[in-house]
Image (tube, rainbow, N blue to C red; front, side, top):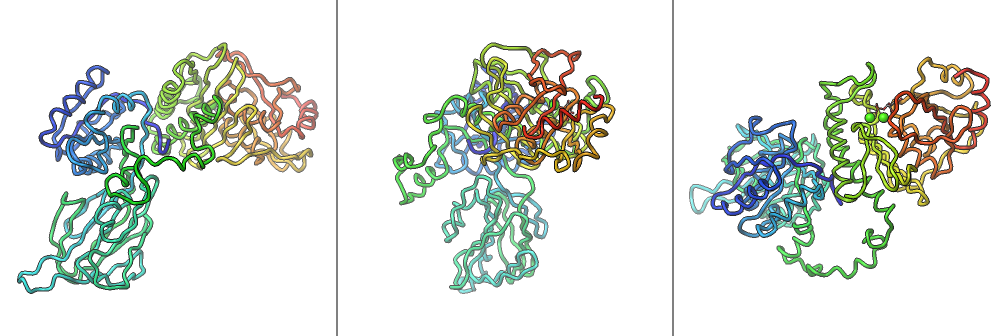
Length: 564
Ligand code: IPD
Ligand code: CA
Ligand code: CA
């Protein structure tokens, strides 16, 4: 799956083009049978805060063609509402679900099987225009008054402060990756694969200068276009159209807010849609033969259950990471659980829902237990154990050290572990018997066995006992505030050992899988093997000393000389 998984769905806002009642009715009928509220709006009606309930997971649906989808992208993006385009009429690139597939596609979304892809948008400012588009901005020489008047003109283009040059012709297109298959393509621009593509491209329109080629700039580039004659500006194929006078400066840059496009298995993949609609000669739509040459291309057929579980866990962690990144640094309200440092936020619950739904949809028979649900207890067979947000204190203070922790246990023993740090993009995963990895690369711990060469981590250390005992003996004791990340760092060799005075199973399960997979060691302060205690009993104290293995006996020996 590419993009984050769309996990929950409670409300739908439909924007529909004229004469699409039949399709809209089928959306409403489907929603009725799934207990989902629907708000119906005609395309062009602004989506305002009154339509959006922030406490509910809302999906936007457009019913129409690509024009309606573009209008929907503009209307829903400011509210961060992901958008599914249903194509009620002509061939469309963006609105890709056919009316016959509406029920099946919506059900796929409902079950948490659809993905959400961020699509780059552009901001444009010129005269009294100040708007956002998702496709392309087209500047075209304003037609002359007289039939024999000139139909070409000059545009001077600057990127940041650098003068690119004079584009002499009938106009210029600035397109996003999404818009690259439209006007930009017909004028010689390259097709951009739109997923995670944060660029804009400048493509001359019917240029009469041989030396002008399209250029691609980053979304942060400030593109300024100075008009040497009167030009018409056309935003996203007529959504806004206006004449601009000679001398006007048009500012274009990538928008901060991406549009969120929902993709289901009922829309054609991007290249297949191109082959189909643009009649590309590279391959035929059904030509999937060469795929066999790619190793691992069809993972589900060729790999085992644990590998699949690890993939689902990584996808779920990434899905949860997206809203976490959005909310990070903007937490307004925290709830206190047991004391002033035991807090939970709206983000913990959102991440929890997303991960649970993603796992439920792939492994419906498995129990999912979590810090945020009072249901942690031993289970025979498979059960998932998650801490949707480890390091909530950091998160609430805008500190980047927080993580999503997801483990699959078999009879209480972690066999898959995923720890994901959304701010740094560090993705750790391990499969029992299958190795441990950071962003796909194998990890291993350090081999240090001397205290005076080592760097330690400490978690909860109530009276600073561990710090006092080890600070002078080592190269330092750091405290990052996320137990799951601590364990991952020991497994990956960026620290040699870790002490946690008191642990809970959801903090440890995934990290423990990583550590064991790299032959690290985890015990209590006396050297007894550390075991996950799955009863949710606050009275039980479970200390942890985790290390690279080679330093462990020295740590234990030193701990015996101090009182912990
Ligand atoms: C906490 C963090 C912290 C550890 C605490 C945990 P939370 O988890 O992992 O580093 O010292 O013991 O409770 O509450 O942020 O999920
Ligand atoms: Ca935790
Ligand atoms: Ca937590």
